[in-house]
Image (cartoon, rainbow, N blue to C red):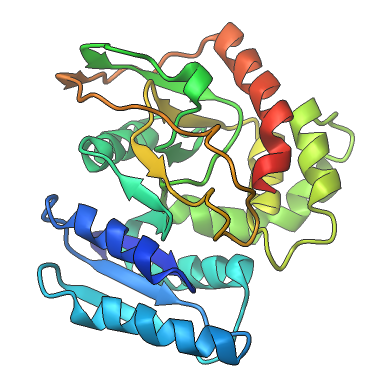
Length: 276
């Protein structure tokens, strides 16, 4: 197995994808795979011709790609792709076409994966940080263990993904008596009939029942450009925007702060309507 692969998921936003690919030119990363879900209709077919031009025409970075003939929907496309690539790579870095990695993103992800190999209770390494939790002007990039998963630029050990896929249903049966948090209850309610569009529901539930945490940076290392009305599941807003300044050093010791954990829960409970 190779070390890792970067998976970029795209659909019908050629300009967004182009911005993501341009950002990758400076990082000299390899094993970049673009997955283009199949079109739903003739309009999507036309737009995807432009998306394919962006993918096929990029000469500064080497890309492998999958062009799906049928439309699976984002949820099935991501799950199916992770099932496939988790058999080929030790860990996966997942980026959607509206998530632009900032300078420290890949360095942070690689350090986070090393921490994850030691700390077995980390479900995934997340790259985005909420504006209210975004630390300003810190010389060092602090790391935190938080309860909730935000899939805007993230990474997972392949063995953890495979374990989730094998154990999910049995975990739910055994853990029905565990009380869900306020934010999780909202997510379950909102996403009850949206399994085709939203894949994170089961992953969040699984890690909650396993009492796993998620590793986060003290500042957002992802710029999300998807809240411009172009996304399938998101509304128009600038509420998730964060400013960025590079740190001198990335911490090696994640902090588990109960106040910060509660603060994240409170914020996400208010914002859940924007991203689901």
